Every structure is written in C-alpha cells, then in structure tokens.
Image: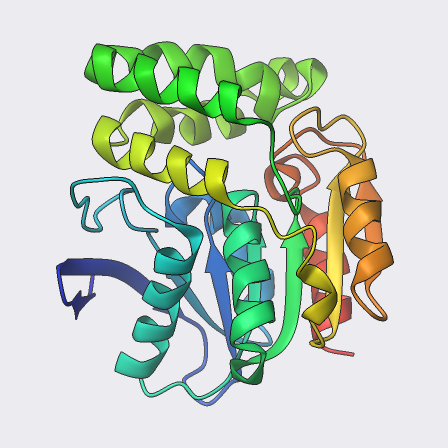
Length: 262
C-alpha cells in the first residue's frame, strides 16, 4: 500500500473510487486499522474517492515512541491531505476516529465539507480506565493485546451479532491482537487526554452523529450531548454496540451516504 512520509515516519493509506469524485476520509477506531471500513467501500465509492489510513500506532503506519495526543493525530490527517493535494474533504471517524474528527472540526473546519462522528463522545471514559489499560498493555506486550481481543468482542458487538456473524466479528477483533502494544498504549493516552466538552460548540461544519443503542463505551447519551452543542447536528441511532459500521452494515452506509450526498 502507498504511504506518506511524515517528519517521523510513514503513514499508510489507501485510496479507492473514481479519481474525479469528492474525497471522503475514513478514520479507524482504537485497536483496528483501515480495513475496519471494508464493508462500506462498495457503497461509498459510488459517490466518493475514499481515503482510508492507519492511524499512527496502528496497522502498517508508524508507531513512534511516547504517548500521542488527538491534536497530533489530527495534524497527521492534515499532513496526509496536504501530501495528496486535497484541499477539502468529508470526514467520517469512529470512536478514536471520532475524536480526531472533533479536533478537525474545531481547529480545521475550513478543510472539511461535512463531518460524521460515529460511536464517539466529547470525553470517552475516565483516566483510571485508560491508565489501567496502558499499564496492562505495556507490561504484557503482544499477549496482553491478544487478551484484549477476547475482552473486546463484548464491547464492540452485541452478543447476538457476534454469535450469528463470526465471519464479520472475528477479523475485526483480530486487528486488535496484531496492533503494536506501544502504539496502542500511546493512542490510549491520546483518548484519555481528549476532552472537547467545552469546545465542540465551535464546530460549524454540517455534522451527523451516529450512535449504537447497545454501545456501553460511547452511549447514545454521549451522542445527544454532542448533538445539543453542535449547531444543526443530526443524529441517527442503530441497534448496535460500539462498531456500528460493522454491525449495522448497509443501514449504516445508507444513512451516512444520505447525509454526505444531500
């Protein structure tokens, strides 16, 4: 796959769809990679040039030392757009990707045409949750990542979906098991330190918020909190847990496309 060279390493990306179509950027969740969006590509490429990338610390992208910040990850997105000569794009991010989308909406809204914030929150969980996970992963290495994979199935998917569709759920949680422990911990710190509850009102880009009714990580209440503070924001809710793009499948794709192409 192609890469863009940042100041401190390479960012892995993939482009699909017509070269003359408007650009849609897809941003992965914590512990996955750009392939978490595979199910959306056939539908999205009918309307967009789809740009996916592995967030720093994930997949085939750089995994630099030290903890990261959402600002750093947002600036990686801007550097990717600049390197590919993309002035404006629509942006769709899930969970951590949704935090990156919030940062972009607040600080670089002029680069966005529309914004989709999926299964995310202005503040995700508390410091204790993230500090415990960081310590566990750094101490346990790749085995800890494999243990997290088993625990994450219940957070990422409803029990009925995981049981009925293992061929969809297993490859996604498998991404977590192969994620760099250092990269994962560094991104946990970025999520831990992100708090946009007082800032999201600055977003002026047309915004859609996507929630999962069974999402215990970023709840529908978190989505409604953001909707109430982002002027004109719309909200759609699916019967899904944390990875609604996988679990809601075509319904997710159709709702996002209806918003993006309006």
